[in-house]
Length: 422
Image 1 (tube, rainbow, N blue to C red):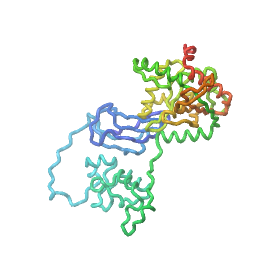
Image 2 (tube, rainbow, N blue to C red; image 1 turned 60 degrees about the vertical axis):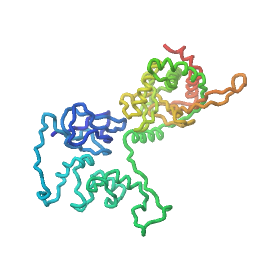
Image 3 (spheres, rainbow, N blue to C red; image 1 turned 90 degrees about the vertical axis):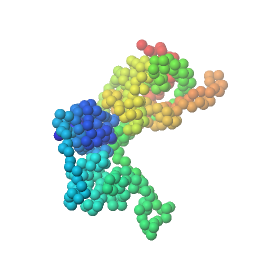
Image 4 (cartoon, rainbow, N blue to C red; image 1 turned 120 degrees about the vertical axis):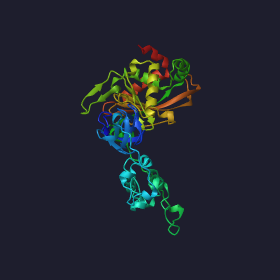
């Protein structure tokens, strides 16, 4: 029997959470077959088998933490698998009078699917409530009594779902009628969910950014009436090439052109805080609300890409982020970011900088509003609100205003971008 050790799955990652096992103990596996999904502090990662065989033991239960270079599961390689000897038929009279041991119980297939650890002894045999170590730890964390929880598993085994269901009951639900309290005074216990993976990293990085970078916010309105009309004209062309053309490629391309006029917005302050690093490439990040938490993958070298190429990258990164499967390379190297909160209906937002970048813009939803034209007449215009956040250690109000005016000019008169395309 061999142990499969959790390999290095990213720079600096030392542990991850087991999200879902794709196999159970006793399953036959093939080389390169998906075995388990784990969540790192960056994304969801799929671990595959490096050789065929039979799974003999799962060391880490679903929802628990696995360590890099530690055993993840045990298996018997294909060439070493031996047929199990036939077992003699056992009649009830031939059963031993001694209690079943935990080793014998571990051969129960149902118990193998219930918990990774060997099956706990039953209540009837040993006077203990059967439950896995992970469940017992969850019970202790919530200061519950295991005997108060009704088990739905084999032989009354208490499962994780039973504990969560018990927590969702009103505080006085387990009391007898003589102990019952008025329903108006009953309080439900909160559901506890550990902060792990991407959400844990987001919490840490946002606190660091907000507490170490002096933020300067700048708001503006942009008339995107002409931009919307241009996109409608170009959508059929993009669709004929298999691409979906949203406004994001226009936002990114206009931003790359504006950066050429204010390159300091695309710079970063070094760790010592005594030098600026200017980047020639515009790697523009976009905040994606994924099931794993907030991710900010970035489109590399936007200044060199066409609108269709940007649209292709935006679609690829959005799909990967929402599935929690963004490559590490797509999350690194960003120089400036966009948060399109307007896609969910927000009008205004005060974004937090994605350190070590120098700036981020939050884009609000587009609204059709009355505005005066050059002749003083009221017209119906598509107005989009935006809010910039800049690192005030080296970006001042004048810089962000000039940069925003340039970006705004390209978006309000999108055909002018043609003059700057190489």
